[in-house]
Image (tube, rainbow, N blue to C red; front, side, top):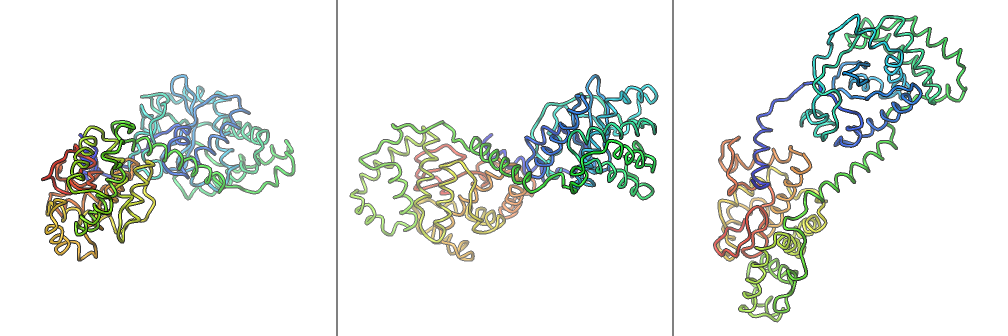
Length: 500
């Protein structure tokens, strides 16, 4: 199966896949390294930093796990001998604007481990299961494309595979002990302990107005607030610590750092994925034929396409070539390209770098993407739906490069309505083909789906039919130059092959 078939099958599956609201669990370290959105990475990295500070003060070794549950809660639990602290998406949303309050939450859950409340609670409430879901064998693989900004996060090491996560209720004394320990660790770690008071105040506001899970496992009370306030006064933290203003969990600097890391990781991933098949191009493959380099040959082919063959003789003469010489050169390069897919990509880049006409910039953008194995940089020449419709319509013409009459007919019947020449279409169609292929590699299936839907409708297919590889224009089924096919199909000097 080549990449074009794979993209179509992925699109068909996604079209029929229902939205899921399942709750899943991720090691926070996995999110920090692999979340596909900058805010997700930044939030996870800041959670890691705060958690490391509080864990260092507590002396507790426990895994920090993120839950996609939108309910407001956090809890400490154990799976076998592994200590775990779980923080839920709903709680982070509520406390996102208060970094110190997040520290208070994490410290509180670590304190339940430190004071051995987990085992004591289990002896009293053995088998109580609040969440009803399982920590997956591969953390990060189960959110799917509809899971928001963590969608597509790659796999990380799992904790307690196959074990249920159990959240226990603690008594008032245990809750107050956890608060007390957390406040002390917050001050020692350099967090404003007033974050604990703000947390307690917020929980108090929720009480009576919300069914948040945290209220069933961490009952709020005025006594907890008063006890925390008295402890802060007793510990007498430095005035500058108490004067520190409320700060968000993710500030602009953290977000910018995460974005830079994400951009770098994205480029590295894409460069590896776009590595041409067949390895590198050696000097022998690039050796000139009759003093004509591969780049010159590609440039001539591009110029022939732009001129629609009208000045072929003049172009050859300008390059001191006869038609017979050029045919020998063409056959020689075609034979090399058939044997070396990497050479085919080199040719394709050179061909589009020499593009002329109104969309020449898109040819150069495509050439840069091929040469540097990077994303395209220009905004699309027209919408993805238009690209799919045009590709499907032009496929019906099955134009040969040497058939000037067929090109003129296609321009009249299809392209004129869009203000495009045949040369314009070739450039833009291959630019869009590359765009869709890269979107698939990066997990942006919305572009793939949009192209696939419109292409199927324009070609008259059933919306979810599995189109056969020979007829589907999704991916890099690229034609560049006279009778040279670069992309999904094997290259061959086939004089009767369709042009796209």
